[in-house]
Amino acid sequence: MTMVVWPHRAASQFQSRRSQNMSNAGTSATSYRIVMAGGGTGGHLYPGLAVADALEAHIRARGGKLELVWAATPRAVDQRLLSKFGDLYIRQPVQPLVKEFGKLWGFWTGWRESCRFWETYFREHRVQAVVALGGYAAGPAAYVAAKRRIPVVLLNPDALPGRANRFLLKRADVVVTQWPLAKEYQAGIRGKVMPLGCPIRPELVATTREEGGKKLGIDPSRKSLVVTGASLGAKTINDAVIELLGDPKVRKHFEDRWQIVHLSGVDQAAMVREAYSKLPGIHVKVIDYCDDMASLWALADLAIARAGASTCAELSACGVPSLLLPYPYHTDMHQRANANELEKVGGALIIDDAKDAKLNAKAIKTPLESLLYDDAKRAKMAANARAAGKPAAAESIAHEILGLIASS
Image: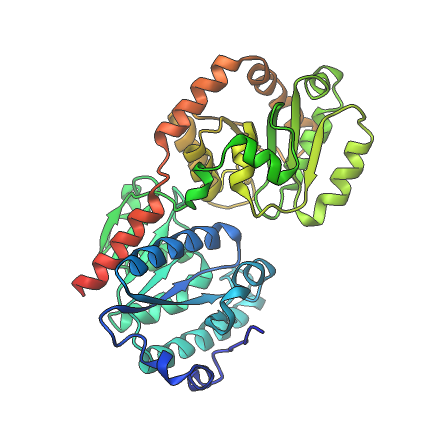
């Protein structure tokens, strides 16, 4: 059972639950203890898990041992992905920094308690590095580590760094980006910036179409449109696609040679399934949540998607042409900046999310029909996307982390 450790409990309680041999794990030249800091969304955790796998492979090949400690949150996605790490999964009380005055106290107390935990933990344990996965949950461990001169590697896969990452940019020894960091964010950075890419798991580019179809129960012989709003789903995309399929001309594509694989998100799955039940004849499979994106992208001939950093990395590495509707509610519109990078290389088309089903359906219709008809255009976009991909990013980042530890 996963132990819940809150920072206001002394870190010595964590130590008492670990055996004495683990307290010595960081003292051997071939043993590593690394803190992976971040969570709250799959967009932060999946890249971290990819780097964790690469680190483990590197260290095991050298005959060494690795202990990973996860500084995350109690959110459901964190529990689903990290519970297997047992008491090495720390559920921090840190909260996002919001502008609402009434919530500032909650942020401050959560930040202070989380930092206090890591101050004690780093004092009692030898940690070789902290890998900050981005977002508010990465803040406390990375901030305290930087103060104690423990090497910090920051993953910043979005084209525009968010508030938490801007705070950490000046504290990290290495900043890993997916695209070159804009000049306005480079001032005061103490470490080096390396555009190594957004880490993905190797199986994402190793799964065949036939394997993917078998695993997901989908006909691999039909062309597939993947609709996804990432791990939580996207209501505006779900609504727009359902609205679009009300057009008989569009619907006919999915009665004939195309099929839809629709990742709806758990909360919206029932609504999406009910909507499709009123559109008979369409070849469609609705999936609430998919933890096998390798199989999904292996089947994809075209995608309608958000433009999160991980989604863009997967689309490019797997060579999937896409219509991107960036998340429209962020103040800095960083998903729009991500989408711009993929559109610039000719791998995607951007459709601004109007937050209205009818308007979105109207905007999607013409480019979607053009791509459904035009095999050559899709092939060109796929090649462009693949050429911009960095499928070995996790391997490169793991190598950089271990190099930084060695030099420290």
